[in-house]
Amino acid sequence: MLYLITGGSGSGKSAYAEAAAVSWHERHCPQGRLYYVATMIPWDAECEKRIERHRKMRKEKGFHTIERYWDIGRLEEDSEAAVTKQDVLLVECLSNLLANERYGQPGVYAGSIRKEKEEALREAKQAILSPLLALNARAGGLFLVTNEVFSEGKAEGDMEEYCRLLGGLNCLIAARADGVAEVACGIPFAVKGELPC
Image (tube, rainbow, N blue to C red; front, side, top):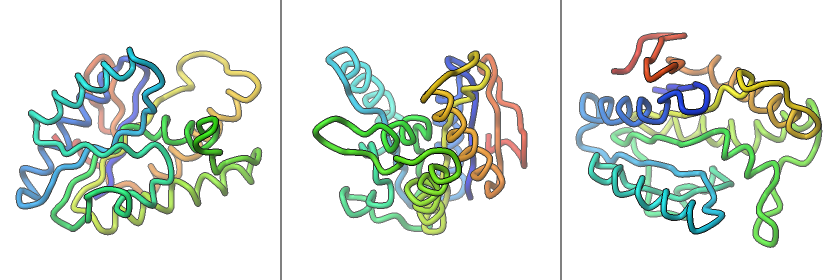
């Protein structure tokens, strides 16, 4: 089961995604594990504090956190995860994953999406979409969080290209998803399929 959750900044999409993943796990996969795949690179001490606070809150909900900033296809190789049909994964978030693959981390990872326009979208499909669909085929549920970046004003230059890529990925995933929800002011609305909780 593949479910995409979108919304603007501060919309409540992350809280809803966590609740949806926990609910799905309890109802459909109670024998498996509940994984939280974190994609945000901890850039500074403030960011690390926020991540640690969120990790503690998630642990209370039963999540096993895996840090995976890029190369999502190697999730199981580089972690303790061996995803089965009894497991539920929440990937937070597609926006960070795309940024990490597009811009990399200086001195650590060059990024895999280097082209522009349609060629960049092909690279994004290979680096992000295909591995996520493969994970979904092995899991009992895969919840993906993404951002509705187009509601936040006009982007220019490379940011415009990033937004176009994210929009393209969002559309490709939504087309394959069993369900899509948009969250506004903490309220989820079903865009495709039914709300998971």
